[in-house]
Amino acid sequence: MSRLLHAQTHAWLKVFAISARHLSFTRAAEELHVTTGAVSQQIKQLEERLGFKLFRRLPRRLELTEEGRRLAAVVDDAYQAVGLEVRRLRSGVMSGVIRLRSVPSFLHKWLMPRLPRLQARFPDIELHVRAEDSSLSLRDGDFDLALDLNDGQAPGLSITPLMEEHIFPVCAPALLRGRPPLRHPADLAWYPLLHDVTAWRGSHEHAEWERYLEAIEAPPLNLRRGYTFNRNHLTMEAAIAGMGVAIARQTLIRGELESGALIAPFAQRVPTGMRYGIVHAPGALDDRRVAAVHDWIVEEARRAAPAGLPAE
Image 1 (cartoon, helix red, strand yellow):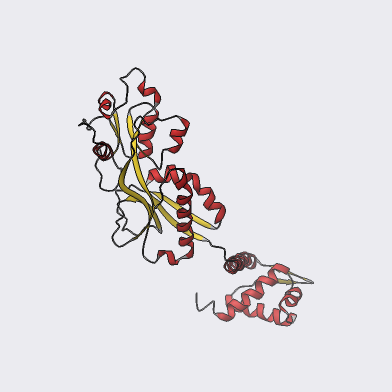
Image 2: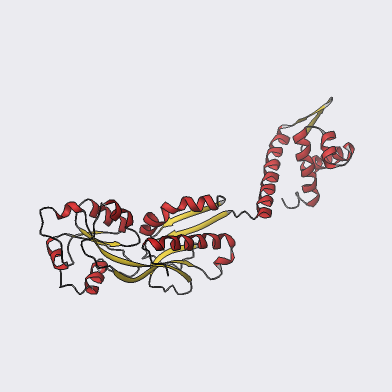
């Protein structure tokens, strides 16, 4: 194929595309600033090169053959695509695919509501988003950017910190009806507990409750009871349904608290020692498209910080 489409063939194809658009060698010659004979000769040479006729030369007009019609459509699409990309490059428009990976709860509750702003700013960037558990390795190289909840360590990768995560118990107001008051951590003994078993990389299924109760120096409680879920947002849905008391993440629960769907019975909010961050391979930000999405996420995190989300 490369021998068929040598440099001269590409030049002839340009002449063919213009001639096919006008269905006139004379008008093609005017656009190209050459003679009609030169256009006719180049089309003849292209036909000989390809091995089939492109035009039927009728009295006073040209008509594309079936082969010519099919080739004209492909060539026209190709030249339009090249022209569009050149215009984009000259105007500084960024386009292309960015692979974004995120822990599901952060993607669902924090990022998704904000994505329309990214789309509005960079309409030609196509984001391919994947929700992946934090238990999966970040070293597989299947992403350009990854939003992760971790301790700030990702060997062989770079991390831009976004915000530290704090946790505290929440429940539906209806859960408290007909039960002993929930004023102190010891009162949790009267209530079913809800657990997110994939809280962060390396955590066990009771890690969030354990971290919270140890931090506030609560009396010993039996944590190995209740319902378990493998997504934070599923745990919160169970809490909203009145199934028990769950551990909420400050970053992801604001809407439910403001609406009254959930309440926080205790005032203490405990840092987990984990923080959300943008993980990427060294040098990934050299791609200005990746850098643009990265910087937009950082900007959104800073914008959210005054509402109670502490940015790093």
